[in-house]
Image (cartoon, rainbow, N blue to C red; front, top):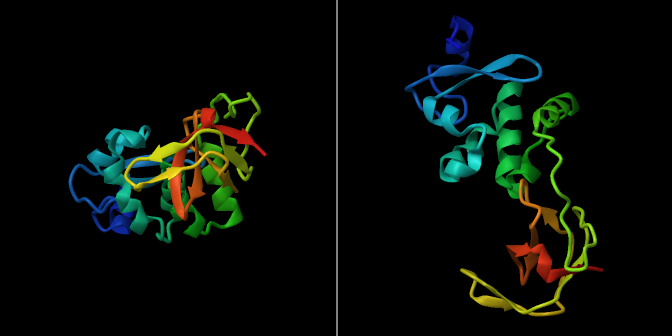
Length: 179
């Protein structure tokens, strides 16, 4: 979709997500049919942000935009990337949040299950059933450790996110049991 004069002026000739100035195009933020300006790099991975997760570090800035359509896209992308810390900081008006959530892919994803087959949901407390070496953090999560207030990993029903020894880590759900 080509850029109209209003979009061009609002964006200042830059991608509203990453700030790039080349390969600009309009992108419709469904279901409201409002447009934002994105560059060709953003357009290439906007539907599959995990393919180029480093590029989306730009969302730390664009999530503060005053343009609701930009806020919606930042929310959707941060959700798909599993960037819960940024999502916790992002405040959206109720109608903007409803718009953002309406556009998220609502595929019938398998539920996340623990080692016993019990379905896990966000906020549950679980116990680790096997010593797990945490790569990159330099410690082992010991069997019996309780992980409270777990978070689901977007798009991956085999992992959860939780805090162990003060560090947020990803844990394979097969090594957990619900408390």
